[in-house]
Image 1 (cartoon, rainbow, N blue to C red):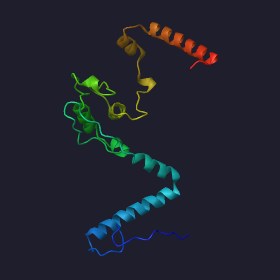
Image 2: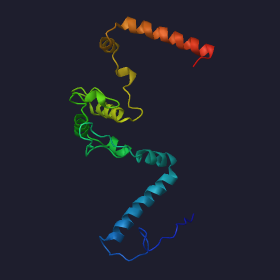
Image 3: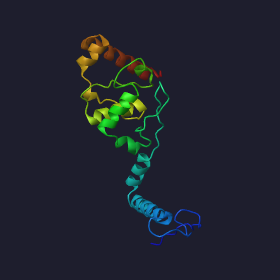
Image 4: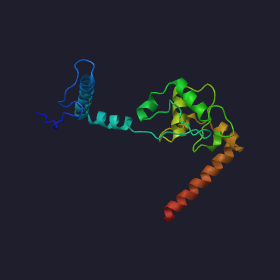
Length: 180
């Protein structure tokens, strides 16, 4: 199978222009082009890989600190960078954005989170993801303790269950009646 590549100009990266041999600009461009070429060939052979590469390169909009307007230097610029954050970086980000050490500014962010001591890496990552607006970072249902939730709401588990049954019944009636 023959591959046709678009022509390159002497001024384009990796083009036929003059460059120094060794560590000069041409060598850097050649290495970058080779890496891109390998990635492109792998992506052509594996569409799932191509999709995942596109997802991981998704750019994230930086979140600014309310008090200064600054962006933390470790704030992830892409989805891949988010998944590569270390435990220490997650703690630093939570502190910078007033989530680890609650203060008057904590609740003023769009999606504040409760950053409790002793969390594992994945729980920290999930909480920070939720904080910065990533989908799929909600706390899984199996991690929510009903008694703890009821205590926070000031109601018993039975009261909460009764309310849930009542609402399910209302939703069923709306669905059957065609209400939205």
